[in-house]
Image (cartoon, one colour):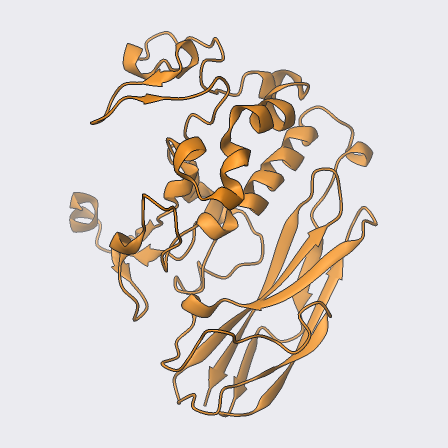
Length: 283
């Protein structure tokens, strides 16, 4: 915090993407865990992807870094011994990306969390200068035993994030026509004002630069809105159509807003996902 004392005009952005760090191959929730284990990483990232990815650091991959302390020579062992309890990992398991769990929020995927930290990023929902910007609780609600999401967690985004990584690994060694590229996704109105009980129209657009077929999915990012009513079950009318509708709950109050995501994924060997994010505010 001394940085903030010295430079009070700096804005510090914090995330909680614990799923993108050390021991991800063991403690990630089931929907994403495979993508942090050795078999998936060897096939999709390290092997057969050129010189750059050949040198990507994984557990027990033989790498040795001069000047690095022995306890951090993860390429020489399957045991990570620092911390309260040593952990035994498998060869080629994810080592841990350190600060990458925060840098990924800068990838322009269509999420608007840098505009409003409660809207969400690929790191999950974030803090500004150490403070959460919404009514919900704090980071402590993440369950390290079950791997369940908390309201800030980036874990819900781990599958598209890793798929994106695999597509980019292809970029290091293949010609553009033999690589996949992300769909271009937008919405006609990103900010809509409506009254309680009103039906609003959601107009999305999606084009794939490679001509791939696209899977369309609208969903309500329930815990990243502001609404005191019953969130469970809120959905758009037709979640798989680019143009659809959403009914504002009749008990919504002025100042509430609903965070609605248009998620588009292309059907490719190394798929990529992009988003448009519509905020429906109650007047």
